[in-house]
Length: 243
Image (cartoon, rainbow, N blue to C red):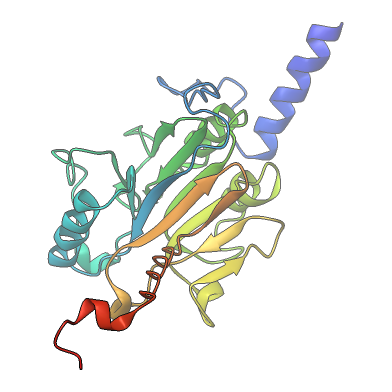
């Protein structure tokens, strides 16, 4: 009876999302590895929302030269990047917003960085990617932090995706290329709960925005100011010509 009860609960959850009860697990679900990073270790990842292919190439160059471990791209429509973009990079590059249908499969690109999970969602082209999003999000529940990325987000525009990512089991961070939530600045909060919504950095400030990940959470990276050097006790000792 207990097993039957759990099976009914799972089937009901799938039906509420409009998914068949026989939905299959993705071939390679996200598997968190809490032991991959020692407790307290901090790392950076990068986010960019290029408007053109040239801007995307520049963002990739900046990322390769930076200490960031992962680059998440949420390109605007004018960038027209293919799924192979960044394939030759020396570090992981996740591309959100590429055209995809459920029939094609692989509409959610998942990456595990230590104990954290990254999910880059494709742009739904009528086939419904909610099933992939649900199953991949479920596989990332054991992560320290879960970070999802979409090209464009508007509340209630895709109700089932809202349910999967922001309401039923909300991710910790949603990276977006554009959203009305960012009308007053690059940072906002989900209207449904605790998820933090981060947009791209202002163009005049650079093409790539860095984020810091630690046990405390995920936040925009603020470089530390170098400590000022101590002034010499005797200024004349530095300049023998001083009378």
